[in-house]
Image (cartoon, rainbow, N blue to C red):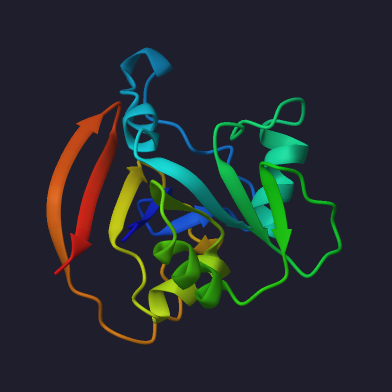
Length: 176
């Protein structure tokens, strides 16, 4: 069975975006030469991405408006908006939990939960996330969009690995 992984960055105080929805603070304390490429290692085992509309919209309008940066994956965008799907980007108006469970049953590599917070919370509340790859950014935002808001149950995790670079700390957990 395929695994579902959350791979995301958050501020030290637990936010994935600031109060305006911006992620321009997602950087370490020094320069990019000090960063480790954890993304390339992570995506070796991924072929499917799940994301909400706001995450998709931010990618195509702000973060990478000229090129779809996830062209090597099949991406499901959960939305109520009518959009035309392509081979690699599928806009679906379907229950997130149902979609995640059905994708886990299909053959293929693992599934990446890319964002946003609402989608993540739905999967958390059903305990469907197998691995948590969280990069803690050395920034305190004070307000914004929380990563773990309204979780309706305790989920016990086991720490698998940590690494620090450029003031950031990667934490990798699995469910116990």
